[in-house]
Length: 310
Image (cartoon, rainbow, N blue to C red; front, side):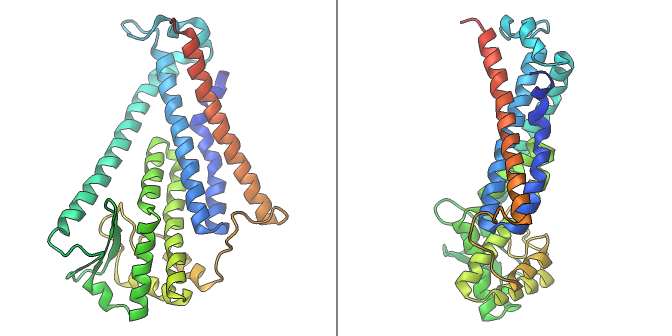
């Protein structure tokens, strides 16, 4: 394999054009699912690669409890600079595990704290808090999530805009956007090269909810006006790991998209256009990257398995 064994660590760079094109040209629903899947696959491949580099690079160290066959010269020949790469992979892999564990712990802590704060309120789908700080967010929980909104934000919106707000947050809950957001956050912790995909999914998930709300309300302009007002009077949800109506980010882009025509329902633009050709080319590059990453990881597993005595 030679230097190709390191490909899973750097190939996520090729996903950046996909993120840019997807959030601009694809339907938000398709873009969110596509980018989440690409980020998860590439993060898993790079993490497995780190683990295998650590195993191969440290198998011959004194006192290592690994099988002797894993330090065979043929195995080490598959990884250039195996000792350096193996020793460097140890702290990197530990950092990845700690970062992912911290992200999961913070996500669960935020959700538990939010549910405890609503324990004294009636168990309805919408929880209105008597708070002077205007904000709203979707709080997932088991079979049924809740929409949390403060009275200050409701007072700043017209009746039609309130319906848009509730439709937006219900769309987050129905599509389980918190799972997409958590998946790309974990992927970005596993490989920093995937951070652009994390930002892109945060935007496309909000756009997905915007379009669902526009369909429910029947007016894209009403949803755009509600988002603009909420962004002016609030700073987004106080819980950073949950999706909020006025989430931090490119609110002007969301408003501009709602004031324009509805996105096409087709999955990909036509290949006979310049945008379609670029999108298909970027998607093909991402697919090749994912397959190369998986091939490198699987090849190393097979080498180690062959070198291990039964």
